[in-house]
Image 1: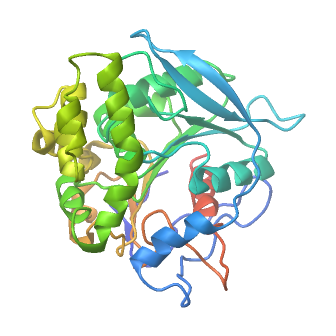
Image 2 (image 1 turned 90 degrees about the vertical axis):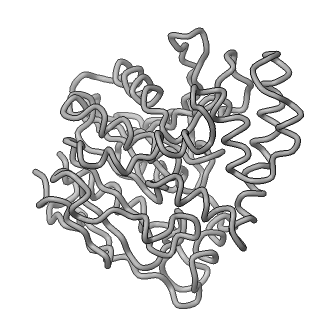
Length: 349
């Protein structure tokens, strides 16, 4: 079942009314940001300092067709888990992974609900250098498709599969969902994307302005060393002198992302890898959550109902920051987002 074309909830109110498999209410309450945590920056940064749940993972290294590998962290299944228990695949954000706060909170809820979970790491994000002169990017749809095929081959054919992408991972996932069209429904029952920079040009400009430059600095502290490592291991692939001069995300994408992945430069990458144009071609039930106060996803760049296919539900609460969505009295909780995602996936069953 799909909602009407491009149905959008600016309050964060969900659309379905089914019940979760365990009998609990399907939907969390509509998202409401706590008054003690005002503003998009606070709602983005504060969650990084909260305690994270303990989650047991089992790592599998999967060989790729081009002679490289992916490191996938599987949620350790509880004894007696049904062979056809649903699987949720999470595609992480820029420089994220299975240890990111959003991943751990989602995986903890999956474990409590008796579902399966997996976090495939984009190349260079699993903790070990990869074997090919390649990294990852916001339009990496072929990589997403290949990862999903590899994971589907490792579970019971009866297992319902869902995928959620966060930030960059959401962009790559939406690129695949849109380009695959109805073919995506042969792999997944539903998808979701959270805090996605749907227009990479708008987001790329925003992250280089004002206080947002703090996020740029944060990302570059790990991106630049990785890029220097690629330049050393694969002579001629990248210019180490230009990497040393990188100060902005545009610089990095122009010097590293574009040459590694076949783009003419940063501007070409931002244009061709943006997921927003593909939302009109989505056939798979897909939830797209973007807070309108996300510091580096300008609200004016977000799509409206006329920009998306009937299978897409846009949820655009006024607050939440970038992958924040804190609720409750201090010190706050990060349960709303994983609950909302499982509600959406249960609705797709």
